[in-house]
Length: 257
Image (tube, rainbow, N blue to C red; front, side, top):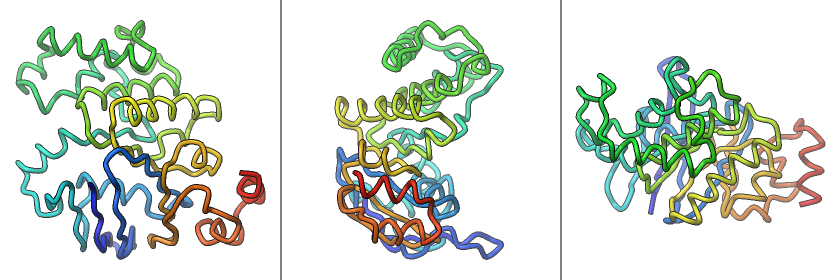
């Protein structure tokens, strides 16, 4: 179980990323974090694996205090936490295989990996990961030769290499069209249901939330304003998260869900 307790992040310029956020995530959940751009979704996810250092509060995973972990301990913890980024975060000039193998950097000899020398077992693992996301034939292609949807699948395959117990997905479909968005989220759903991987995913659109989330946390201006089931997001709750000026098409989607 993951426990977030009174988590706050204030940036050096005084901007508040998140403020006094608390909630729990059970093992095997597909939790979606919703909110407008700037609501604190990315800050929250990056605090969980300490890509961003929280200002206050605690994060416990299986009763281990992540916020108190030293550098060696946090490296070990991150081995079990995969991350999928909105902008893919691939080395564009490198091959798909090289990008996927980078997900195992915490497990192999760092000097050999820098030279591109990987054990056959790791290459086989990477090939299997690419097969799971349906792009094994692209292993030798440069990452920048792929479409956006294919690049995001490389990002998921890279996360798979960690064999993560927890997967953080930071707006993984924000730059994709609706059809590709569903295809990417279906891969995350597969990991959640088939492998039992706990998923915490930030999203904008409520049609995707209703389709994939088992539970939802809503942020507005860094503050948690909603926690509950997707079906509980009615028009009133929608306005709490997105505000009075939110697009009517989104409110309509809530009414029709």
